[in-house]
Image (cartoon, rainbow, N blue to C red; front, side, top):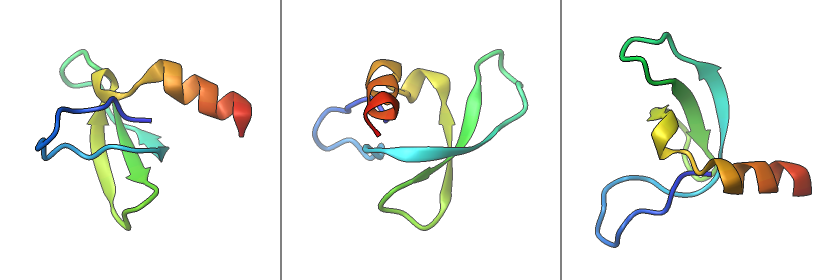
Length: 61
């Protein structure tokens, strides 16, 4: 689950699946993520992932 963004932001939001962990280049973890409503992968930084919501959805699903 990605963190919520302010209205008008071009950042995606919603749930997705981590496809792969990308190489550590800038000392910040990055992931290849496929969002549920998209048919392509995105590179998402760890700081853009809402870990609390992600953990809760994994326990519920």
